[in-house]
Image (cartoon, rainbow, N blue to C red; front, side, top):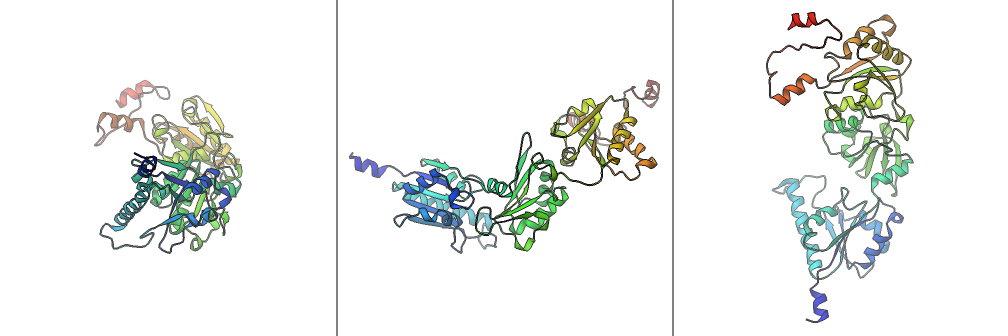
Length: 404
């Protein structure tokens, strides 16, 4: 076989090319090289035909490039496709992959342009999943809109041991609220029509005061500001909501009068914490509790801890309320549920004294040891039941025996 015939039979290579968030100067050198090497340039667009990806790379496209516009049949509107929205999109992806496969079979190098990073909520991934097992494929990473938004805000996004959560705004509002409450930093993408629900989720999770808004980061028409002040009617799809690092932005921690949150951490380990409890522990300036329970709570920079013995419940409650009266946000840490053989009773009893009448107290429930053990055993508490503590550290054994 001749060399020419061998070359003709060799399939082309597929590239997913990340172009960055919008500013052409943020394209990587490798992205520019791949576009120059490619014979076919593919890009996605809505039915209006305007492609953001193509506009970013426009100055690197040549007249001899074969362009393959991949036009979505539907975006946010309804469709009469028998398979609904999902069916229409699956059909579109299959047809698009077939078009690219024809070029690859002919030995052409195909570059699929993608704003941001190709594998980060990118359209290219649908081509990659359908073609990468049949053809040589390479992904060229790009700067994401998440990084661009943080850069435009000029604020640390996540630091140290903080956890960053990236969420699509299309999630149900209740789930958005829970996830925002349970994380340190967050970015919510895919805004536009989802913005009202995202804003409500920010408010419901207690993060609205911290949240910032970035629209079209690094693009023409870029806008940044406070999320709470943003007009919902002006928010486009290419916008993100950012809850930045609290370590890097100490002023972002909620301010206001002090309070006491009595939290239940469950029977064992962080997996048993509720999102509400996680948020309260993260927001607290001071943690107060029995040392064994405090040790279960991950350390936070700048957070003060006061551990004590488990026989001084009233003193611990008074200490926490005094701190809150002086303006501190205090979390009193209990194992299990704080209202079951734990600190809620002591805190509320002391809080009833006149000097603490203006101190807000919240009790945040947790999973009890009884319920956790019952779940492991099956369903022994499926009907009426009584719970009795066998500990004689705070009451005489004679009392326990009588109750048994």
